Length: 315
Image (cartoon, rainbow, N blue to C red):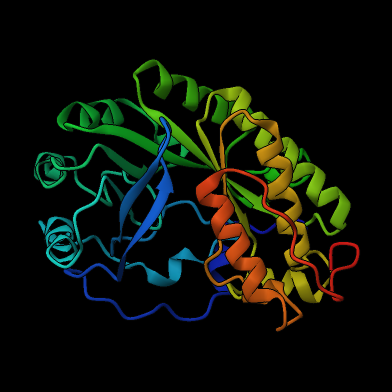
């Protein structure tokens, strides 16, 4: 069982979903990111409530905030309106739907014009999508926008023994082809890269393969890489953890892969600092180390390390 988690097995191990209103985004926030051309850009991020992703990835926990059924007609547009009425003005907007923006069974193509019309004030529009769904729909939506489209794609890892077991249903070459297709149509790409995916439990090896994956993504033509530490709590990962096929990464590991990625100087590198308390075993230094990484996200420069007696060998 631990070598072959198919979609049915993965979903059978889940707990319940959060109860959501299909006409309201389940979350939205205002944040900052460095601009691709320099400076700091303000970013509005809307987490849309929509149908669950058709791909049941082994490590994913985003399904907790999704619907089992199709969104009612016009619901996505109403969610965007609701959030924009409550968010300040910003340079950039992210529309994340815990799945694939260009899955037309999640966001109907006939709603693209109304969605695009709401985004006229933004210079950059970022959505997430699976490599298999990077197609003509991306181009059509891009043409409706006044701003520049950027698509975030989960590459996860290029480890040959791990990626096929994540139920992601892609190969590194699939990712490469998707990036090439998008870049040929003047659409920017960012990649999501995992730290400590299941089946990669040695700290040094996990750091190495995260770095290799970031390097591969940049070589393919992405502009940005976001490093995401794999969390327990989705059911399948917890089973793997109990059977020694997964181990949570440490805060020091996240710091190391971040520094390694920035040292490449090939594109922007971020770390996802949301809900990373589980990475730390020390209350004394966690806040300072988290703030350091958040500052590095903005500056894209390696800051002096925080010193603490707890920090030894990726602990």
